[in-house]
Length: 218
Image (cartoon, rainbow, N blue to C red; front, side, top):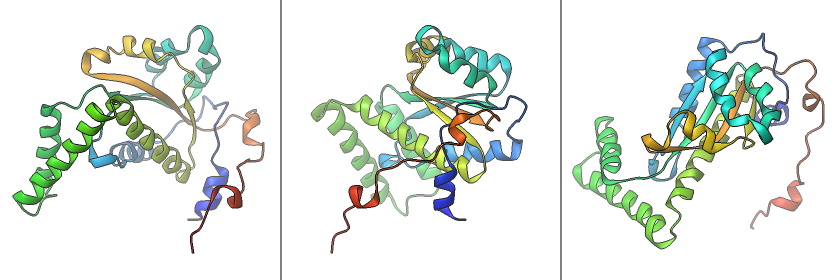
């Protein structure tokens, strides 16, 4: 695998071919990309709503009415569309749930390590809850880590993607009753295969130079 080649090939798809669908095998790998993404202290503060049917994608376009209508067609023509959601809290019950799952999965060699991890995760969460007062923002940062993980991962599968912040997040919260479930929409990612008239597929990639953005210390 040539990671540089994949990075240069990856781009934000502006037109999807509605006749090309992601295979079940690749979809299973996409779900693994979502589930196995890294997050700070392994807090995993996310939920994903995925649509591959016309009816499901229509529901997601509730977030692209009015000002955001330019994204409606992209959602409808994509093979799969993912609404990325963030938790709105990380209470004691959730922290214990994480700990129990890690313990069940065999992550702890002994009780001392288990309690050390539990304490450290709560310390970091409390720092953002009380000191920085940005717990919600911190959790949303973890969701964006997941989005980045997904974009690179699907590129290795030859799948095109479009991450979208051009959506009405409140409308998506209401459509899927996210706030009642303890979540809020953060962004949408459409997946599929480029259409033949996608102008962005033919434009050269532009990034700041290595010399400008990277400092290698001696």
